[in-house]
Structures are given as C-alpha cells and as structure tokens.
Length: 385
Ligand code: GLY
Image 1 (cartoon, rainbow, N blue to C red):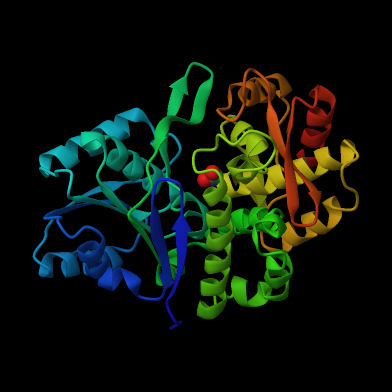
Image 2: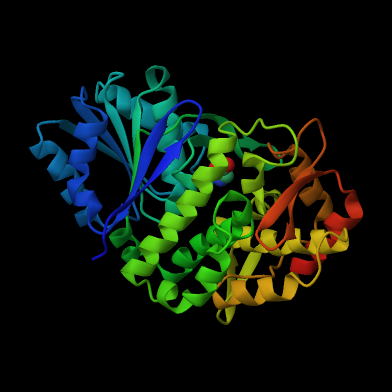
C-alpha cells in the first residue's frame, strides 16, 4: 500500500485532480458522486485487458451507491481506434440513455481512454468523463490533459489521432494496483513517456526528474508501490505544468504543449508503417506506441546533435532506454518516402512544414520547423537496426 496522492491540473477551461494510489478503483463510486453529483447513470467503457475482478469491484461499488451502471468493452489496437468503434460505443451510451449530467467511465489503457474520452466529448455535445487509466502510459500521459479522439483510415494507412476533440476529464483516478496485471513489455512501454517528460521537465518545475528516475530504476522496474506512486505523481505534475501553459496546443513560438510531442513525429510515422518490428528475445515483433516513442527520442537526440544543438546526449540516452527494457533500433524503415509522407500528414505538421521537438540541453527542449531531409534521414539511420 502507498499513501494516496493528488496532482491538480489547472487549465484555461477547468481544473481537476489526478488521484494516484493503491486500490482506488474499489472506491471509484466516491469520485463519481463527488465530481458528478447529478449523475444517475454511469456507462463504463472497459479495456478487455483489465482483470475482470478489478472492473467488477469498481462497478459493484457504483451500483451500491444507487446509480445505474452499463458497460461495454473494447479490445484495443490502433486499428480498432477508428470512427466505427467510436460509433459503436456512442450507440451503446445512447442505449444506456445517458444524459448530460451522466458519466462515461473509461477504464483501461490509452487507446480505450482516447475513444471513451471522445464519446464523452461528442455524445450530446459533452458529458462527464472520469478517466481510470490502467497502464503506465495512460497514467502519465494519455489520461491527463483532455486530448480525445480516434485514428483516420486513409488509403496510405492510419493517420494517428486525426479526428478528435479537447475535452478535459472531470477527474482522473490512477490505481497503481492495476499495473500488476501488465506484461513487463507493456509496463516498460509507459516508461518511454516518463523518459520523454524527464527530457523537458527542467522547464516545467522538476529539473531532477531524470536523475530521480535513474537512481530509482531498480524500484521502478520491480514495481514497488511507493516508487510507482512517486513516478506517476511527478510525471503527471510535469504534464500538468505543460498543459497549464497551453491547453489546446495553440501556443505560438517554440514552447507550450507541442513540446509533449518530443519523439512523437518520428513515433507516429514509424508505428503506422507496416512491417516495423522491434527485437524481442530471440525474435522480433510489431512495435507498440511507447516503443516507437523510445525510438523517436533517440531520433530526436540524433537530429539535435546533427544540427549542432547538443552533444553527448545519444549514448547515455540509449543506454538508459535499454536499461528500462526499451528498444533503440527497429527493422522496417527502408521506405523513407512513406515515412516522410506520414510526417508531412501528421496532425502536428503545420502549413505543410514538419515540426520536430529536439532536446537542447538536459531537461529542456525546443520546437523546430522543417529542418530539411538530411537531418531527418540521419535520425532515421540512427534507429535503423
Ligand atoms: N500526449 C501529448 C499531449 O497530451 O499533448
């Protein structure tokens, strides 16, 4: 057990708490009653990967508090995160007769949280969404800050998160007990977002995040409750500090929410490319989002060095990512034109120019635009197996 903590997220439109602790899902009814006092119905959109008993206990508690509960399930993949699934889910919310005072409860990883959040943003022009992230990646990133949405199917593949809305949750409840059900690979994928935060945290109130993570990597990898609670709280605090400056990622200049895209211009292009694989033991397997972020961080560091903005960053970063069980190389990057094409179409591109976030020194990053093909190709070489 660990002492529960809360991190306040304050944006220009609203504010809410992210609660972090062990066993919080069992008392989720308290959060529902407090944060949506007029609610009579709760519709839970549940990730099929979350152990049934965790979900059952959470929903039994809500029923015992005299609220009507309905439930639907999603088996999450990027290919399921599309408008058809959003439509199925919103149809179920309508069948459950939710009105604007009711609650969508998202229980699961980032894909389920993004779809459920978009159902909550769009059904009847918006109702309460309580996010219950159950993966590390969803706890430290996806559930916080109100980005919701789905991928767009195009003839050349999926355009990541191209359809969506900003819709802040009413509250976020991160029950670190749920991390126990993850495979080590899925847990480690979330650590890539934590490394990302540490690479920009000096500008957002936590210059020591990276050194704390390195010092406590054994406890983190052993999933000790206190270390996990501290890891999640500090990462959420960094994310909250960034979101507070620029809720809708419209800040001009090179600061603001766009910084959270560190590693993501590469990651989104790579992870949607057919045939990209990362080493796993004696074999290799299709890449996961957090793993693509790990590669994206190395690529961004390589680009920064190539542009003369930093030096000596790549090797320590690669060895840290490797120690955290994350890949720094992948197979399947030979179709460079397809990668560049995806980068141009990425929703982070602006006016046809590709934007990258690059580290400029330990704990600090900046946005750059259109660095030209040569540094991009060199960065891709740096992560090619
Ligand atoms: N995941 C990046 C953001 O929330 O802005």
